[in-house]
Every structure is written in structure tokens, then in C-alpha cells.
Image (cartoon, rainbow, N blue to C red; front, side):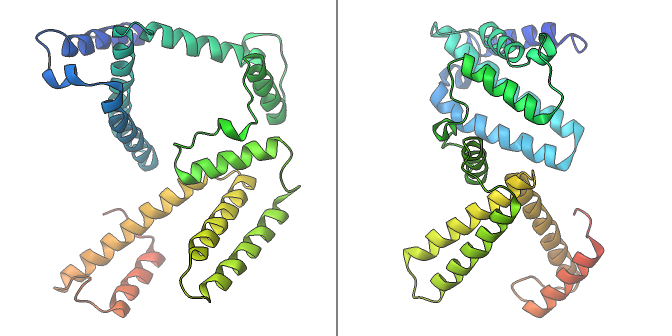
Length: 266
């Protein structure tokens, strides 16, 4: 790059030129062989790496991961332009037009003072685009399961299929927990998995009522678990032990101490 840090348009144009050179004659053989099908995995990986960076709150890392994801978005747009379908300019113009259309309270004369009014304006705009925003079929099955469950719950709620308040959602958790325990009292059957799924779905509904992102909440808990277990491993190593050679009581004592001290990142 040559110095367009302050001009995103110029910087993007230069980056597009770099991608096209990589794919063109005399460029990189690997880049030239990629297709939309081969890039799907990379797009997903980069998206998750960006989420990880966002969870850690590390701006330099976030900047790097945004760039990696941008590479694949530009790459895909260039591939489809080569096939005569659309260009990156059309992608950008399309999303710009959509944002203007869906924000008449910003770019037009509409008024919105509450979140409910904002939601109504957004849904009306989608309807004018010929879309059915509340339909369960609009929730992508490719989403991670927790995200998909939360989006399905939101869509169902918009169509009136919901409890009036969180009390009903909490009671559903209690009901599913009891059914799960009853299933576990029986020999191993497919009901174990089914009841566990029902319990997880009911917990996601509670998260929805509390405006908590269930996927993000679980991801942060996983991160916390890894940090604490790393402390357990390091503490055992100082004593010449490993988790495999230590007792459960030894590991639990370190875990509890770590929990009380809110152990820092390794």
C-alpha cells in the first residue's frame, strides 16, 4: 500500500488492484485456482477469528482480522465479476441503497423515538422490499446452533408466538430440566439427546428475554474455562506434575483458588 490510510475509497481501490494482480497472469497460482466453493471455509474461519479478536478487545488484532476477512470478501466479489455476475462496486452500491431505504428516520422524514418504533420501521422497509422478515424460513440453517435458536425465537416472537414475560421462559427451563432428569433415569436412549436439546433451546429463550447473546455468553465462558485450566496446568507444572498425574482434588483446589482470584490470562 502506498499511503491511502486516510482515504478508505482509495485504499480499497488499491487493494482490489492487488487482489486482481494475484489472480491474474504472472500472479499467484494458488489464488488463481480458488473458486467460491473453495473459499467458503476460509471465509468462515476468518469470521470466527475476527469474533475471537473482538472478544479479547485487542484493537491491533481486530484490525488485522478485519483485513483478513476483507480479503476474502474482495476475492469473492472479483470472482463473480470475472463470471459476469456482479462487481464489488455493485455490492457496495447495493448495501448502501439498502441501508438508506431501511433508515428513513435518518435519511428521510420518518420519526423513531423508541426501539419498538425502530423495529417497526425496519420491518416495514423489508416488507416493501418484498421480504417476509418474521418468517422462520428466513433464519439461515448455516448459523451456529445457539445463534440459530435465538434468531428463531425472535422470529416466532414477532409473529406473536411467545410468553408475555420472562416468567414463562423460566418456567419452561424448569420443565425441560425435569424432563431431562427423567430421561437420564432411564437406560441410554435417543431421548437423552432430545431432552438436552429442548433444555438448551429453553435456556436460549431466557437469554433472548434478557437481551443476552447466548452464543457470545457461552463463548466467553469457554474462554474463561480455558484461562483457568491453563493456570491449573502451570501450577501443577511448578510442582513437577501434569493433569494426568495429579489427583482431582489437587486440580479442584487450584481451580477454586483461581476462581476466587479471577485468574489473569496466561
